[in-house]
Image 1 (cartoon, one colour):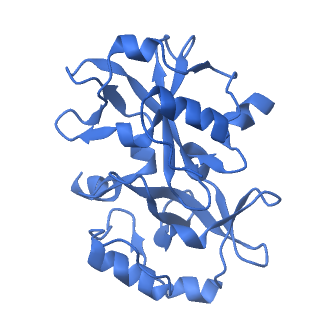
Image 2 (cartoon, one colour; image 1 turned 120 degrees about the horizontal axis):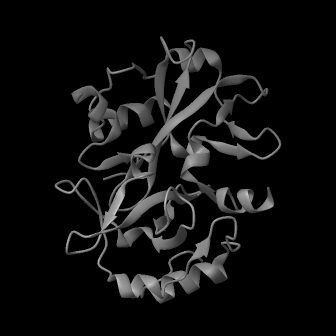
Length: 123
Length: 123
């Protein structure tokens, strides 16, 4: 097992395939959802946002919430990410349904980052 | 299909789960291997290196090559990444076998980046 963990995660780094599917909790340790995937700038390699999957059963009826990467904090005790947001705040957040994604351009990016009060650092 | 592509990739961004498993070619369009996963700095969100899977059948006997992220260029025509390295150069490169990963610390990082002649920008 130790070897498997080694490639998945170090103190500083985490594997892409370990991020995907990881549970996301609020500050009270209540489960909000999970990370569906995250979007990376092809040139710079910078993760721009994580897509949080929230609601639905077996993926049916799920909604997807783009969150600025910097809002996610990995908690080794919980074995998942913690975000400092309430469920109420999440419920009013930018989101989309399966197969109804918006074009994720800078305009949309600014909307998402703006909603969460995070400065949009990309151009 | 268009909707599926939209969330996977934009002009600027690519989804984490689209990177994993993507074929890697050399400059002549010859297949070198595929991306097994990539390692992301938890705090900054910066992809530090991709792990290229090379050799082996059905994953048995495969070897894993950490490559600086910046060496990978996505080619939309090929539908995969292109790296400017020869098979010979790859064969002498830092690598490890399944379940024999090194601790990926800054010392190892500098070795990997150094072998490929890429400045190591982390600390």
